[in-house]
Length: 466
Image (tube, rainbow, N blue to C red; front, side):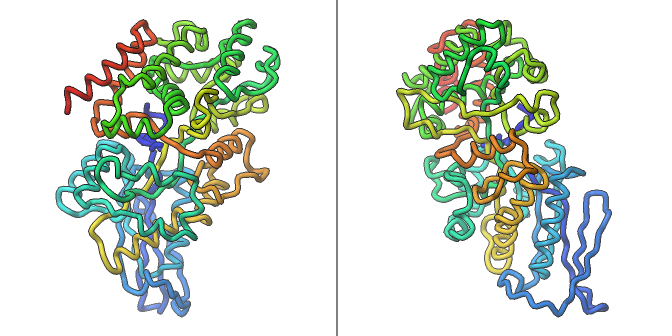
């Protein structure tokens, strides 16, 4: 998938696109009688802020000197990095006795190798950012991850998150009690559409049900405009489209049941979700020979007004805002099935999160909890949304000001309206090969295979690896 997450692959998804870099180090400058906060980036460049040592700090987490280590994939220069650096500086002022060391690296291979070494030596960072349910469940079983249930019980902090934000990280269905991540940013995926092309086709309202979407597809084909830009060469694009159909037809809990092996891909309702996707192709929803179209071409076709809709994530906001047709664009949630009204609020939101080190006690535990609450709290997340135009996992953050574009506000409303959310369907399965298997089988079905045969291919992958 590459562009969006991994989570995210959060996202939800993850899932999964991670979010941390830059370090704030707090040390006591005895010579000057002041607390000195030093922020060090990957280049070794430092900034120093002198704070009056006489300022009393009564936070319990700062009563004892503690060093925390952070390890993520985000490093380098970007607006998100600027936000994070500022957040760490603010945290250091509030907790002057907590020193923060950042070991983040941007390259995936370097990150994975370093984390494996840390895991093997028992020297895990206090806060890190991983994706993939399979690995996280194993780490939770081994005690490497902290169960954040006690943090969630702080309702003044946790009630501000979007509904169901923590449920993605509840591993009870895998035999592990508790919650094992704290949501950070999210990558919602919805339908972006061209208002002018809709009007030209005589579509007077955005489709809310699948029947209305089918009608819109017919009207757009009648004026020789591709209804939905979707490329199959990058198989994650078809996988993302099926996530939408699966959750609207079967619900989020069905995807979790598939991952927990209490349901099968050959179940009639899952096969029907595949059939819906195939029928959309047969109905002319996508461009001809779309199986050979890559993601970059898919976007260009939509932004050049050769297609009326595209199903895409919040990572697409920047390209929409910088395009020549930005004033023509609007958004709406993927339509639901009239037969399944209970799934209307089941949205695709790829999660991004932080994990906390397990098996810690005392001042170290208090310190890492304080930092994670600070970074994901309302104040810091409001700055992330406003200054960086990022989708955050909190519903108590304002996204209605004039500084936010219409496209951004559409994605933000989508997140706040979600009743249940999920990322890639394969994320719930502990079998790592499921990513390629599900996506390849979906594309194979659109190239001529039957939904039943595609479902069997996916289920066979699970059965042979039990």
